[in-house]
Image (tube, rainbow, N blue to C red; front, side):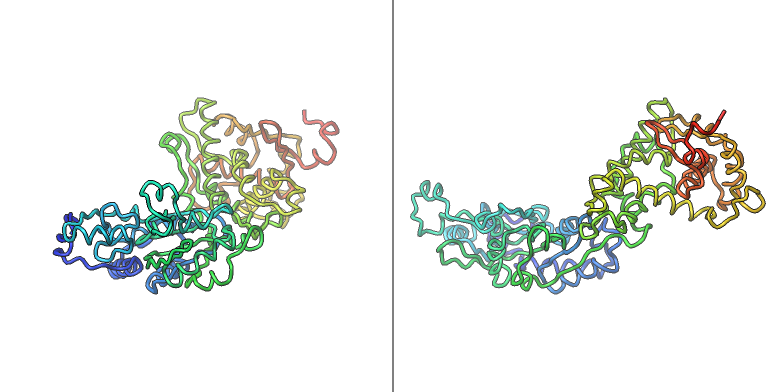
Length: 493
């Protein structure tokens, strides 16, 4: 069929026109029967969003994806092209991508009337059958629907009464394609009204022309619930004409979130070879996003995008990479201290409420990091507040570690310290390595042991057993009394 070059050859091939919605439906049915993946790369929606979208396609509905930022709405929309036929025939040079057997434009109809079966045919690839428009307040009816083109009228020497002077907008040019409008509430109400006829009757009206173009378009809209109150709204008659409204959501489990981050994070081969990111740190990264979505300092209506974890992982690797390059290390492992480089990935991706503004974006980011450290620490080690603090090792598993710091010892972890400096600092703490080995059941590598040793110090600081002081380029851990009485009142010599 794809070899047909003229209308006559196309007719002889047995080609039968289908609407774009029927095309999507038929190809979806085929994929479902063959157990094929319909939306590759979409994780966490298998039992919720994706079945709803498939039902909408089977019902031949226009679709509204409603959800907070970073919930893969646009990604899903762009994957719909995979359900289109690879190629479809169009009248060569057609402005509206006319089906040769069902032309809707006057120019194509006139061409077929003149040339008959010799009318030239082109083939339109599915990747080109996708039109996307970001809704902004300056979008006009002319942009979407079309308007009279005085230059075309003058060039062709036509009066304004001739429909050939019309310059068609994005919607008519998306005939036989998928048309996506992102952030629909940002469209002004009068512009949304212009979509009524297209969605209900499938035709358009331009100025005073008595046109009835039976457009064949699969519409898909995306919207953020925040927009309904902050910037605009979807007017009720338009919502009524969109047959399926589908709610998206954030990952419901850490495992799903980790899979998304791993898939989407962009790391170079050099970074992958130079830096290892332990599973513990990957979990802590995702806990940052989960904590942010529950934080009293962050606007829950705005949401926290999955992009926070993705860019946080990229920043974490880059922080470790920079450290390795500075120290000339051939290989390194990311540390908890490397999380100081993740802060810029957090501060730009959260909308703060009043209390958060008082804390400041940096302060909120540090609170999220503290919560993530605390959560991971308590998931692996005993709660210090629930054990005896009398300093006896037999009743307090942290007794030897407490005693070490009570003796006036200070541990300094340099942000840019080499692998050797990092290990040497942790090895100084009496009983720390033995404590980790006795509480982590799985077999740990030597590198993982040091990471958990750092987690113990970080966790004890978050639980207010130790004092943690952030300096320009290091973290100092010392006895909690050092902060209570001041450094000058204690002799650490």
